[in-house]
Length: 363
Image 1 (cartoon, one colour):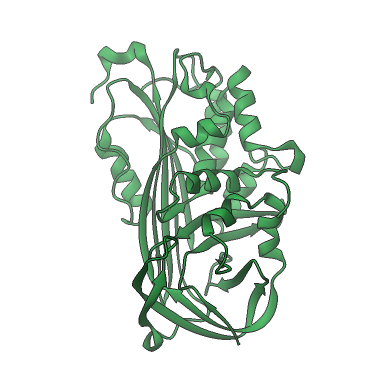
Image 2 (image 1 turned 60 degrees about the vertical axis):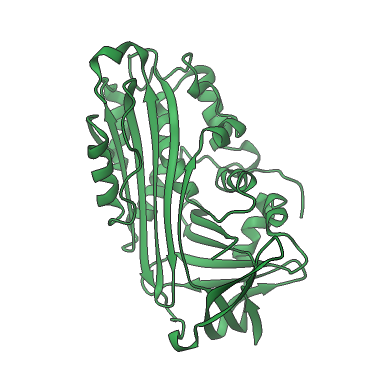
């Protein structure tokens, strides 16, 4: 594996999530995090803007997420098996130019009321797979920016349910557990394998989304595999696929995750946005206003029939002065930790979108 440059926000945020969850399952949606941050980057100035730009857009790979956000949004929206929604709920006035910029992304602007309002939106936009993102609104919170992403489709080639068996799965800590291991035989599989890993790309019945399963070699720890991965190596997995006959054994999984992303975003360089000195003057005239908490919840189910995945990301803002006014052939047997990437290629901007990524430590 080669040097860590250039960097891509989608990969870097997944690696940071892995680093703080070395022994646990991780399901993250980089795209769901990207949307509220890229939207809010249009509302910042000065040092705050520089940090957003440095985090989201790496000049070394000549790709700008904020400039291409509309194309990414349309690519997702036009896929009948994907649903995406954005909302800004606020107690303070949002500038008209910012509202105009948000029209192409169909951002819902509304008054911030209570946790029930937010959680009802979350439940609706994820088809009930995620029922809540917060328990209550802090008395100092003045704004909430939300993104929801939902995917559901059946496999193009379904697993043979009669072949699913309870078999051993070997954890990173060398212990053993039992899992329902599904079986699929594919004559012309999209596959790549070498002394470092095996990877297979699976397709869905209707969607342009694909699922790439990556299984590191037995002598390679999955966390080291991910953390040593760079942008060029990562995306080469998706493009160097060859046609082979493969017998695939894959665990049936149903997972849920919840992340506080504050520390991760700080480590990625976003610091000023969490301070009272943050400059959101292109978003609102209200001061001070700054990030309180960035949260993500995910749901991920993969079985013999297909895949269902959902993510919600929330960015809450604090604003001190409103305190008094606010109310509350080849055998690929995944019998050890492996990775899943749900991706969608956006041809107009030549970019692979990381919709969902997962590290499966213990199915």
